[in-house]
Length: 320
Image (cartoon, rainbow, N blue to C red; front, top):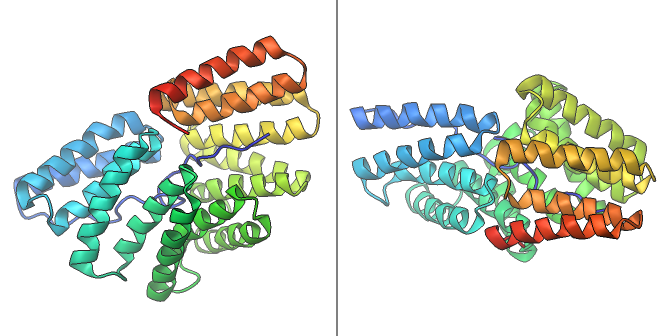
């Protein structure tokens, strides 16, 4: 069974929203700041569809006030790209990230922490698209900038650390992935405590690496912990819970606990449908996992039905 190709991410774990707003000087900028704060609250709760129009409005206000290539526009571009990423709209997100990166490199220089933030997000997008040769150098550059600017134990470096580890994990380079995932978790736990919801994507990704190395007990513990922490922070319907459900189902499938695996795959799909809509590419990934489970059980008609839906989603989204 495969784990989700795309981590379902929250701010400060694998994707970053802008961390601060420009000082308001005009009424329209004050309005953009208010929209951005509201958007971030919705984003962190996994309500990406509701956050999208607010991010669009904030960007439009900044572009109207300062122009399309002004420094004030870079972070609204990044934020809008991050929402499109989480909605599975990868080509749109890539264009927005590239615009943001060009503005930030021009206005702040190549080694600024805000440049590192956008590099991380673009690298994560390439990882999801399986463009690993493009993703790895961007994430390494992002990590190097962060370590130089803030030190090797600052929580801000976990962004790129987690995604670089995921690049290695996706390529089955688990000996390289596991130490990075563990380092990222240690940094976050030291800075923010053991039950910080920002660490849950790292927990799920480390658990996936453990599954592939047959360390099942450690993987199950991490996935259950990730679900408990996320539910406590955000409620039972957050997209990160769907990721952990998918990975725990994959673990149970490997252990021959097929009924438990089927139940969790279906729960994962239901959670994603509720929070991300019925045609998100991550749903197609989980459906393919469920189809593999059905094939293992000899339930070929059920597998075919699930595969048909997965292919329909991919046809609508253009996802790989």
